[in-house]
Image (cartoon, rainbow, N blue to C red):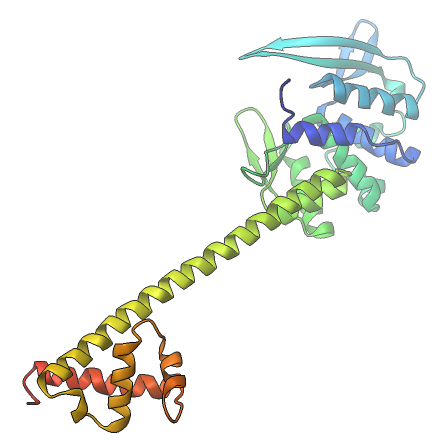
Amino acid sequence: MRKMSFSERIRYELCSLQMSTLNEVEAELMGFMKAKGVLRLSNEGTFASITLPNIQTARRFLRLIDAFSSVEHETMVVQTQRLWKQRGVQFNLPMTFLKNFQDEFLSEEIPTKIANDAVLFGSFLRGLYLACGSVIDPNISYHMEIACSSQNFLTQICRFLKDKFGIESKVWQSRYNYKLSIRRANDLIETLNLIGAIESALVVEQIMQKRSVASDVNRSMNFLSANADRIGISTVKQVRAIEIIDQQIGIDSLEDDLKKLAKLRIENEDLSLRELGEMMEPKMSKSMVYARMRKIIQLADKIERGQVK
């Protein structure tokens, strides 16, 4: 059995949602019609037609129609063949079906009633998504798209998402139409919650949290590795300086605190400056140890240049 894609899981979740108020049903229907609806002329007159990409989405649309209106409609299965066969469902609806929102259907603006109600806008956006939206597997990338033939309409949606919900999106032109893209994890989660895909939003949030933890671990490991490299290089330099001093003039020729520090370093090459300071009598801070170690290194440099014999 073929594994369901993440986009299909979202569609399944949305299509399984219970019908709510009649206003929400109307808003979702309007989303469907704004996305894929067209007016057609025939010998019988003018009618509204919408073709949906799969049977599951078509069933959702049919349930919405039945909940909203008792108008008769024509339904037919259509099949297109490009690189692969694709089956969809076409609904032909009488103009009486659009009597309650005909002006909104013909306009490229977001209907006022929907724009003033976050719940209705969520239902409206759900219809848009089911008709012409998709989401990439969040394990690969955070990316939702909604396709439409009208750039102006998608731009209206883009601005509305930003102004009302703080959701960043972008409208761009593809080969055949325009697309609204959402590419940030938090924005994708907010949008999924808005359209009612609560379980799918939770999945994205869990993936985002796992990535954040993994990223924090990687940063910590990189920091520790880089810090260990720096300490290792510094320690080698300190030990070499002490060996030069010991070979040329002897460690015992150093001042008492420098002599104690040099011997501790030779005996404890794996310890940090802070740990060496804690072993000194009296104890020293890291900065105090660092200052004395610099004196040792500077003395070794002078010995190598022949300035000290």
